[in-house]
Amino acid sequence: MEKSSQFVPNTEAVIIGKIGKAHGIKGEMRLFPLTDFPERLSKLKKAYLNDKAVTISALRTSNNFFIIKVAGIDSRETAEKYNGAFLTIDRDSLSPLKAGEYYYFDIIDLNVYEGNTLVGKIKDIFKTGSNDVYVIKELDGNELLLPAIKRYVEKIDIENGRINIIRPEII
Image (cartoon, rainbow, N blue to C red; front, side, top):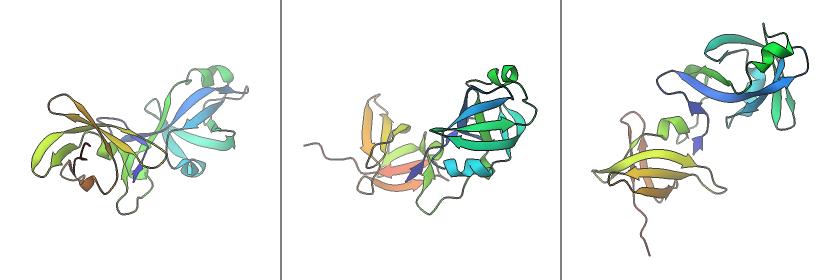
């Protein structure tokens, strides 16, 4: 099973939310979670906003988003400057995963093998109601959509940058 926090390439930052419009006049902002672990946001004290280290002074839920207060952002005008910005955390601050669970950003760009034959790379992951679907860009340029289930995914080896699959039979 995969978790959907997004990794920022070439950094150790992981996107966990996107800032929306300002809320009120005291510098609060809407925060839309981009993580499978929105509950961890309530414990968040340190993060990055536009790559600048910030301290979260308050956070509360409101409908499908959070209201966040960042120390040093004290006016609506200042808060509005962050509309569309991403809230990130260091990779080592991520929630630990159970065996057999992976973050999406660990799976995207893995080399895909059938047996010992390289067939392509994972380029995207779609969430569906029952299981995720891997989008594999094959060496010939075609795309293969592969259900991320044990029947088709033999082994995920993050350390060696590869995933072994069994291609579904086409009827």
